[in-house]
Image (tube, rainbow, N blue to C red):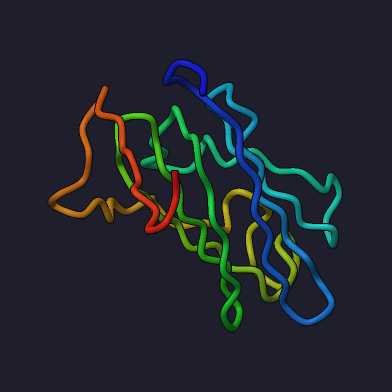
Amino acid sequence: MGPPGPGGGIDSAIQGDTEYLGYVPGDGRTLLRDPRTTPNWHDLSSVPGYPGNVIGITLAALGGSLYVDMLSTDGRVMQTICRIRPVPGHGGNPAWPGNCGTFVNLTPPTGRTTGTRIYWTVPGGG
């Protein structure tokens, strides 16, 4: 295991016949792929409240919304909800990333702080 620091991550969510990809390249940005739009990749770092230093991402599609949850290096759990129906940039829905709401802090009160490492113990593991 290497030293703590920025990393990368990827997740996907499928709604109907569309697969959305979230990618954290480890350089402070978060990219989201919507294959229905041109360009396909969109940088979410300009969305108000973006936490920066993102190291993890998870996506969930529900109804006309895409829930984007992120983990930052300082332990914050942040969420934005992006409107994906109608296709962003059409039918009154702003183009990416204008279709996403302000990031909301969902960090649990027992969340870790900067510099804290988390160790997991797996039953029966070595």
